[in-house]
Image (cartoon, rainbow, N blue to C red; front, side, top):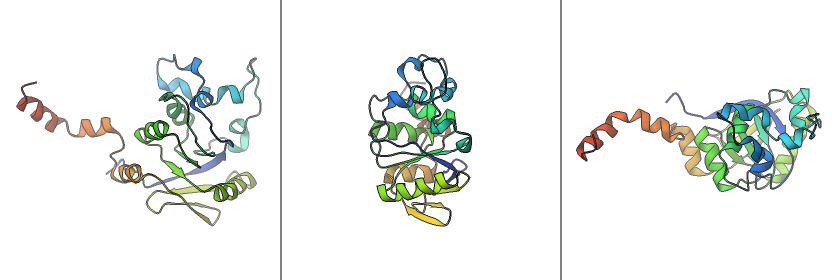
Length: 197
């Protein structure tokens, strides 16, 4: 299928910290946006900018990490409130995958639906990968969902992910709306049979 996600390639960036919650990822005052497209610039806003709008030189704003597509962090990433805006902000900022020590359940599910793989890597391996990324931010990461590994600068790191999410990415069934649209004819038949059409 065209929408299968078997690999994600791109530059990486390591945003350190355990228990990074959804309010840090996208502060509540930005939730009143009309479309999710407006969320990208507000990603980690309070971590990146002072109250007067001046940059705090957050790692996401450093030139060497411009265009990073794979975010790496630590344990319990995406905890806190279950706002869908957090994975939307990550996606609109340009991230295509997240590597962490663990993920909050609802955040993980929301990312999966958007086509953002969330993979788990051991702490020691994340430390080594972060060092490779920081030594040379141009290093390309290959996140291999089929092989359950991340490759960077000739180093291979094992990853884990939920079987259900992995299967959904490999079979292109991660987006329930796409699944509904692809099965419109069968849905209409069922609606007619049940007397709803």
